[in-house]
Amino acid sequence: MNSAYEPSPDSVEVKTCCSTLYQSDIVRFLLGDSFHPGGIQLTEHLGTLLQLAQGQRMLDIASGQGKSAIALAQRFGCQVQGIEYGAQAVQRATEAAAEAGVAHLVTFQQGDAERLPVAAETFDVVICECAFCTFTDKSTAASEMWRVLKSGGRVGLSDLTRLGDVPEELQSFLAWIACLADAQPVDNYTSYLTQAGLAVDLIEEHNEALYEMVQQIRGKLLGAELLVRLKKLDLPASLDFTQAKSLARAALTAIQMGRFGYIVMSAHKAT
Ligand SMILES: C[S@@+](CC[C@H](N)C(=O)[O-])C[C@H]1O[C@@H](n2cnc3c(N)ncnc32)[C@H](O)[C@@H]1O
Image 1 (cartoon, rainbow, N blue to C red):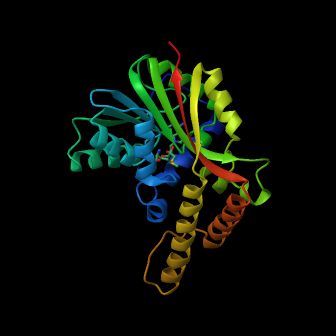
Image 2 (image 1 turned 90 degrees about the horizontal axis):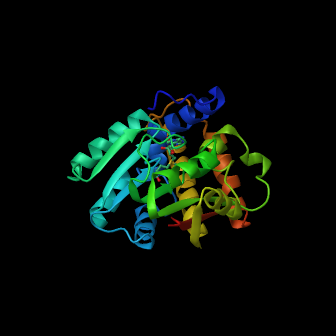
């Protein structure tokens, strides 16, 4: 982590809590290793949109368990660096890259999206999947994307969107961490990127991928609750099934009503 950077205590708490949750066994049980709607299929689609190719350098901001970084290196032969706030996630991702035989192409490092520990104008492509909405200072994060991109370099962002206000039942701290509470209207994502000096080229809706993911989570929650009751599954006592199920239910309704969605967008750093 960049030691010169001292974010406000509030933002440290949110970042630490967010990365701790995403490193936990329960989230891995519910989501697998790919923590975004559409999974690796949507990641590879993003790679195609961004014209990733062999020899290019790509940065994955908030790389989580490293699944996307590894898949893109395997599919396109690009060199990938992942930056992730959670130290444990960085360690797991590094081990996964070695197991997948791509350690020569993919590396991971601990760091903050709002203060990327990399030099300016280093990357041909930057991606950030399902994480921008959790960043506490989105303008700074967008400026950091611009700074580390080479001139003409491309950004691929995929994230949760909202239409109108966030329903009250989706305003809890858990909802924030689950990327729901601070999901942005599509226009806001465009503004963050544009104000940072990035020109938006394309926006695609993938709302169905979000619906499918929340439905899968809900199914797993119901199954897990039953297994815990039957004493056939041991999960941390910290998981509040009632709260988690009601969050999933409220999210599904909101997605069906068009209040939440998922987008993929691409932009470039103007020369
Ligand atoms: C929903 S997960 C997405 C992970 C990964 N991009 C994926 O799609 O599998 C959000 C990730 O953002 C990370 N994160 C949140 N705030 C961050 C920050 N300020 N800097 C770096 N990573 C951050 C969390 O630790 C978590 O791993």
